Image 1 (cartoon, helix red, strand yellow):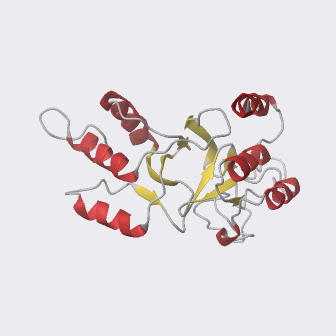
Image 2 (cartoon, one colour):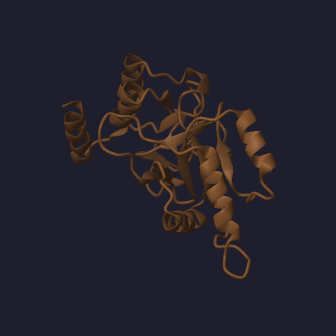
Length: 227
């Protein structure tokens, strides 16, 4: 019965015309036990012709406008639904920031064009993937939590790893859909399965091994993927 109710709730969220950030934050915190906090977001438009795409933080040269924690800081990430409700009631358009690592998912990200190619190749391999977050510039494959030691051993064991791969592990963060940032809208390329159960996640070793194989296994040598 809980799964049926969860499915109905997810469908109802999609029909809402207002911001859905609070719904997503509550789903992550209450149902999936993923710690979240609001991102800094974008400053309000200042007038005609001003699209308001600058970051709301004090740094005029911010390289990830809107897409990072500021106040509160990353250490404030929580699964406390009262805190989550208070944050997004006061800032309903704030991006949803996931604090990666610990018991929460981690992620492996790569440039968007390479990400689209990677998913096509991994599907050909018959590999099962978890949720995939997409922005106009990068795609992030969610993976099971790993430690920095595990990641170091994994990368050391590889002959080569594409330099544009990024790893969002313990002490890091990832912006989740639906969020607006200076880099564009954040969306699900592969959405979590409906229902209250936390999404299934592959191991980081499986994902990295597959990406490395996909990038070096073109017929006659070369790369199937261009990072």
